[in-house]
Length: 128
Image (cartoon, rainbow, N blue to C red):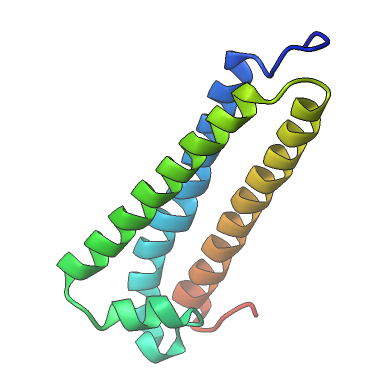
Protein backbone atom coordinates (compact mmCIF):
# COMPACT_ATOMS: atom_id res chain seq x y z
CA UNK A 1 0.00 0.00 0.00
CA UNK A 2 1.58 3.28 -1.02
CA UNK A 3 1.30 6.54 0.84
CA UNK A 4 -2.09 8.17 0.34
CA UNK A 5 -3.52 5.03 -1.30
CA UNK A 6 -6.28 2.88 0.12
CA UNK A 7 -6.21 -0.89 0.57
CA UNK A 8 -5.85 -2.80 -2.72
CA UNK A 9 -8.65 -4.95 -4.14
CA UNK A 10 -6.83 -8.26 -3.63
CA UNK A 11 -6.79 -7.60 0.10
CA UNK A 12 -10.50 -6.83 0.06
CA UNK A 13 -11.05 -10.11 -1.81
CA UNK A 14 -9.20 -11.91 0.98
CA UNK A 15 -11.43 -10.24 3.57
CA UNK A 16 -14.49 -11.54 1.70
CA UNK A 17 -12.94 -15.03 1.77
CA UNK A 18 -12.47 -14.78 5.54
CA UNK A 19 -15.99 -13.49 6.19
CA UNK A 20 -17.28 -16.38 4.09
CA UNK A 21 -15.36 -18.87 6.25
CA UNK A 22 -16.66 -17.19 9.42
CA UNK A 23 -20.25 -17.29 8.16
CA UNK A 24 -19.89 -20.93 7.16
CA UNK A 25 -18.67 -21.82 10.65
CA UNK A 26 -21.04 -19.59 12.62
CA UNK A 27 -24.17 -20.23 10.56
CA UNK A 28 -24.02 -23.51 8.64
CA UNK A 29 -21.74 -25.62 10.84
CA UNK A 30 -23.26 -24.25 14.04
CA UNK A 31 -26.79 -24.94 12.81
CA UNK A 32 -26.06 -28.50 11.75
CA UNK A 33 -24.10 -29.40 14.87
CA UNK A 34 -26.64 -27.69 17.13
CA UNK A 35 -29.42 -29.74 15.56
CA UNK A 36 -27.39 -32.92 16.13
CA UNK A 37 -26.51 -31.91 19.70
CA UNK A 38 -30.17 -31.18 20.47
CA UNK A 39 -30.98 -34.74 19.40
CA UNK A 40 -28.37 -36.07 21.86
CA UNK A 41 -28.99 -33.93 24.96
CA UNK A 42 -32.20 -32.02 24.19
CA UNK A 43 -32.68 -28.46 23.06
CA UNK A 44 -32.88 -27.15 26.65
CA UNK A 45 -29.12 -27.78 26.94
CA UNK A 46 -28.43 -25.23 24.17
CA UNK A 47 -26.40 -22.38 25.68
CA UNK A 48 -27.44 -19.72 23.15
CA UNK A 49 -30.98 -18.53 24.06
CA UNK A 50 -31.79 -17.47 20.48
CA UNK A 51 -30.70 -20.84 19.12
CA UNK A 52 -32.61 -22.63 21.91
CA UNK A 53 -35.73 -20.71 20.85
CA UNK A 54 -35.10 -21.47 17.17
CA UNK A 55 -34.69 -25.19 17.82
CA UNK A 56 -38.33 -25.29 18.91
CA UNK A 57 -39.56 -23.68 15.67
CA UNK A 58 -40.25 -25.11 12.24
CA UNK A 59 -37.41 -25.74 9.82
CA UNK A 60 -38.67 -22.89 7.63
CA UNK A 61 -38.30 -20.39 10.48
CA UNK A 62 -34.84 -21.70 11.34
CA UNK A 63 -33.68 -21.42 7.73
CA UNK A 64 -35.26 -17.97 7.27
CA UNK A 65 -33.55 -16.59 10.40
CA UNK A 66 -30.18 -18.00 9.35
CA UNK A 67 -30.53 -16.65 5.81
CA UNK A 68 -31.49 -13.28 7.28
CA UNK A 69 -28.31 -13.28 9.37
CA UNK A 70 -26.21 -14.11 6.30
CA UNK A 71 -27.82 -11.28 4.31
CA UNK A 72 -27.44 -8.80 7.18
CA UNK A 73 -23.76 -9.67 7.70
CA UNK A 74 -23.06 -9.58 3.96
CA UNK A 75 -24.66 -6.16 3.50
CA UNK A 76 -22.89 -4.80 6.58
CA UNK A 77 -19.56 -6.18 5.39
CA UNK A 78 -20.13 -4.70 1.92
CA UNK A 79 -20.64 -1.30 3.54
CA UNK A 80 -17.46 -1.78 5.61
CA UNK A 81 -15.47 -2.66 2.49
CA UNK A 82 -16.76 0.47 0.77
CA UNK A 83 -15.68 2.51 3.76
CA UNK A 84 -12.26 0.83 3.72
CA UNK A 85 -11.85 1.67 0.02
CA UNK A 86 -12.55 5.36 0.76
CA UNK A 87 -10.20 5.54 3.76
CA UNK A 88 -6.79 7.01 2.93
CA UNK A 89 -3.43 5.92 4.29
CA UNK A 90 -2.26 5.64 6.99
CA UNK A 91 -5.73 5.27 8.55
CA UNK A 92 -6.63 2.54 6.04
CA UNK A 93 -3.83 0.35 7.44
CA UNK A 94 -5.26 0.61 10.95
CA UNK A 95 -8.79 0.03 9.69
CA UNK A 96 -7.58 -3.05 7.78
CA UNK A 97 -5.77 -4.33 10.87
CA UNK A 98 -8.93 -3.99 12.95
CA UNK A 99 -10.89 -5.85 10.28
CA UNK A 100 -8.29 -8.62 10.24
CA UNK A 101 -8.43 -8.97 14.03
CA UNK A 102 -12.23 -9.02 13.95
CA UNK A 103 -12.35 -11.61 11.15
CA UNK A 104 -9.75 -13.77 12.89
CA UNK A 105 -11.80 -13.59 16.09
CA UNK A 106 -14.97 -14.62 14.26
CA UNK A 107 -13.23 -17.65 12.74
CA UNK A 108 -11.75 -18.59 16.13
CA UNK A 109 -15.17 -18.33 17.80
CA UNK A 110 -16.70 -20.39 14.99
CA UNK A 111 -14.11 -23.12 15.51
CA UNK A 112 -14.69 -23.04 19.28
CA UNK A 113 -18.47 -23.35 18.82
CA UNK A 114 -17.93 -26.27 16.44
CA UNK A 115 -15.61 -28.00 18.93
CA UNK A 116 -18.12 -27.47 21.74
CA UNK A 117 -21.05 -28.78 19.70
CA UNK A 118 -18.98 -31.77 18.62
CA UNK A 119 -18.15 -32.51 22.26
CA UNK A 120 -21.87 -32.44 23.09
CA UNK A 121 -22.59 -34.85 20.22
CA UNK A 122 -19.73 -37.26 21.03
CA UNK A 123 -19.36 -36.92 24.81
CA UNK A 124 -22.88 -35.85 25.71
CA UNK A 125 -21.69 -32.72 27.50
CA UNK A 126 -20.38 -29.25 26.76
CA UNK A 127 -16.74 -28.22 27.03
CA UNK A 128 -17.83 -25.06 28.84
